[in-house]
Amino acid sequence: MAAEKSTIDALGQFHLDTGLGAIGRSVNFANSNVMMVVAAALVLLALHYGMRRRAVVPGRLQALAEIGYQFIHDMCVEQIGEEGKRFFPFVFALFFFILIGNLIGLFPYFFTFTSHIAVTGALAVLVIVLVTAVALRIHGLHFFSYFWPEGAPVVLAPLIVPIEIISYISRPVSLSIRLFANMTAGHVMFEVFATFMLMLVGALGAFGYVLALGPLVINVALMGFEVLVAFLQAYVFAVLTCIYLHDAVHLH
Amino acid sequence: MTRLMRAGIAALMLAPALVLAPAGAWAGEGEGMPQLNFANSLTGSQVVWLAIIFAIFYVLLSRVALPQVAAVLEHRSATIAGDLDAARGAKEQADLAVQELTLATRKAHADAQAAIAAAVAEAKAEAARHAAQLNQALEAQLAAAEQQISAARGTAMAALRDVATETASAMVQRLASVAAPREAVDRAVGAVLAGRG
Image (cartoon, rainbow over all chains, first blue to last red; front, side, top):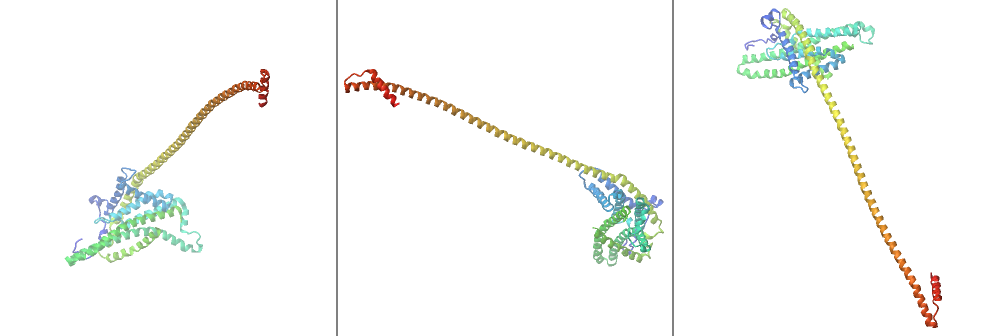
């Protein structure tokens, strides 16, 4: 992050490297994987320490754990129905894994694993495979009627069926790109404005410090916005998962 | 909620355009977008580690952490339900006690009224008895007085005959200068007195 840098390297922050030193190098353990472990551990520790006292009147951490639990539980039951309770641990894991991944990525020098399309794509594929497996398990071959809207004229079958199939397949694509793009965009903007400050100082000296206040203010506002995005994207991912699961359980 | 969500999703769909434009602009330097650099073996291998980490995360959540939360929430709702039941029971008991108290008060009231009524009745009876006694005594006195009067009257009447006989004898002596026989005078006086009643 030297001030003399003349170009903006907005994408270097997404560069994958091995984490955990030599051990990580030997097993290809990436810096993104380190943050995954941190995110998962944070969630588990928060739940564990929050629930340690098992108080009837909860303290702060316990209230946090219970609110998180109730929030996802209600979301599952509301979107999927009573059967949604079976998928609750999965949606809970998904939501908090992504949410904490988004949030810890906002700290300087912390890698944001949700900004990698391979990661979000894998999560989206996991969701869609689960949804399809659930649908096939519950409805058997009747599941394929999902691609045929009831009461549509038979003449349109060659048109409607491919469209339905494409829309079904595009679900994981949109699911993964939405999260990846949002996180990448936010972090690129952080980097652009931060580097811009350094460039101003490097080029204009003392006067540059005054001008650099502009990008600084923008970055502060951006940070608030990115916190919102972190929550919103995790929520969107979880809600869409619930909606797809609802379709899988009820078909249409 | 859903409308807001939809609007949010629509807005966020535009985000890729924002990213991919700069990505294209900087693609020339270095490795381009690290996310799309599949020459880096870590891009693929991180997904394998993701699968392992997420699987462990899921198992720990669903087997250990979430049941803990569920148990606490269940315990809380059970405690609250139990407390409510206890409160309801206590209220029932209190209601019962209030009812009992009302009944007892009413009974005491009735008893007091009865006692007052009895006392009044007794007093009245006593007064009546007293009055009757007094009446009797007065009547007895009255009767005695009447008897005395009639006795006096009898005596007086008896004396009156003697006086009348003597007066008649004396008047006959004076007027006719003859001594009338005592029996005849007595008879005549008796006949007159009898005639007057």
